[in-house]
Length: 321
Image (cartoon, rainbow, N blue to C red):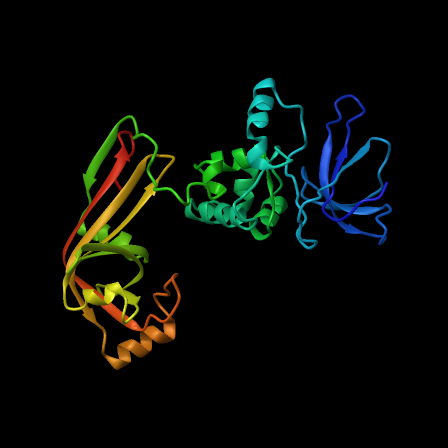
């Protein structure tokens, strides 16, 4: 029996009360793949030198794996229920030849999304792994390495992180958010000015709305908050350059697809070009904000709000924040 890095090792439980184990070959002792192999086990997160026996099976991956980043399943294989088998059969086309693994739109996306969501919730990696029933070293590997994820493990992670497997996989990036129905008992509250500024202060992506000769325009920008002003960068000849000297609206919002909650903050003020050399030098040194769109964006604009308002949608049993 010869193995390659990335192969899945399955050890059948041949004795009573002995569960099946699975892991991933992470290193070879012989170039031709002869045993022993170094196997990272999904149930413990530990790597051991392993000699296969008659109860060992190899499941080979033939698609494009990076040799430095083998795929690692995080739960022992089990026999799926009839319902699960029907669900998997219906999703085989979307998942390729391996319907038991969820395929991210980009191999590195799922780990970054898991880590970001975990940090947003204030959960440690160890705590998250324990709640999801997996080894902490595996979760560390998943967050830092490109990998396909076993569907059951992804579903458990999504439940712990209060989101969905589709969201962790990057699903819905090409469709507008908020397509699901509303919560059963939604409450719409007005945000205090301090709460509005607290949400604006995080920076990120907002939308500038302005009037032009051909009609109103709304465009997204990366922004930063400094000394009570909103700052963004744009191209000197771009459409947002027309905002300079004009009264504009600036809006920021966030939504939670799973909980059907969200908030929005709207500001109104005059957009001004930043010409002060010390201020420009400070901004350029920090490279903040850094436009995702790239390119030459050397026109720095600030908006000092004269009007500020915000709304938050929450569920009826949730306290206002």
